[in-house]
Length: 261
Image (tube, rainbow, N blue to C red; front, side, top):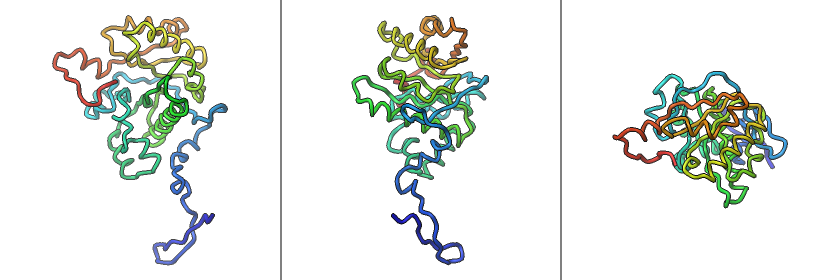
């Protein structure tokens, strides 16, 4: 295979230059994953998160007008996947190195200091390869946000089944701050027990000092119940106000396209 090509330089003279193999093979994301380590088991790109500065408000990806409600507003991706991962979504832009789209996303996120990594939906009745690929996409986007925007990205803990959690924590060994969402867990007793088990497993596996919670309940009583094990271990559980909770408690709120799932 030829690894060089001839192009004309600025003076109109032909010269041999290396081919952009990353572009030719659709491996553009390697420019980010190759700057971190890979987990030993699944070779997932590792993330690093350790900070003592945290967001004081969380807003959904679909509402860029609210990205700067405060100086420390975090952008989260707790919405239906096609809201942030459509044909022209951020992952495809990274994957294909679509410079026009990437420039658009940089403009969209300009000035945002905090992100919660994308919550790609996971399903117990979907093949593990699809679930793992979605996890990889979240990791690649997280690296792009950190490297291109110099932002702090909090890994979102997600899983299709509790038994799969060892896979999903792979590569987070150097993360001391993570994020959870309580959506879809509050109104179902089985799901409440699931998130308690997930919190315990995560706390026992990672060396955490802080958990950030995206919660839409009226008060923190349920959060205190769900994260009781973390609190007992001395972990700081932070529940910043968020736009969804604000909209839910407002009589004037009407659901918008892209609201949380």
